[in-house]
Length: 160
Figure 1 (cartoon, rainbow, N blue to C red):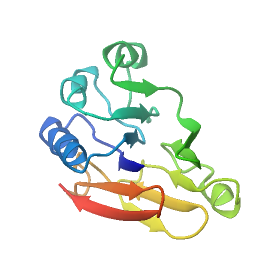
Figure 2: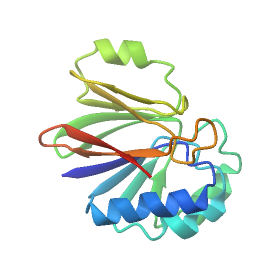
Figure 3: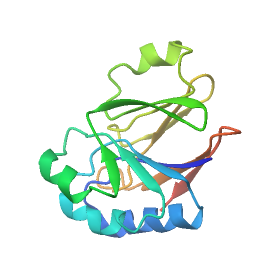
Figure 4: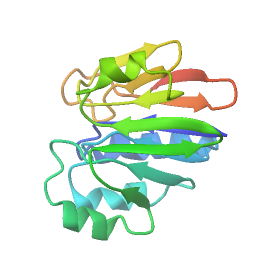
């Protein structure tokens, strides 16, 4: 199973479109969004994903009820912290890295995904920790997403 991982898209429609196109080209099975989608109108581009999407809310996601409404059928969204099991792997998806160090030392999870800092971080080990950086590029101008093969845990950082 192949994952697409992104965060902090912050309404940047052209870069969201590039991320979606890349994930579709890479034939990912599931996209994880680690928060800060921001506006409900971004469903226009995210709706072009050929994969299912799971997302958590970030600190800049304001109108959560309307985000939920506009993303119905596109993404499962809930809270700012989520546990899931995908392809036999236990995963944590969160926006802010509040419990990152505690999760890093726990061997309960195979993958921890977070956002918020807008900086790419990959920590090898168990768990594998991934911050895909910023999709939107507003803070540092380095627009990135990550793909991950869940079977091999091989990952690739893709500049957009």
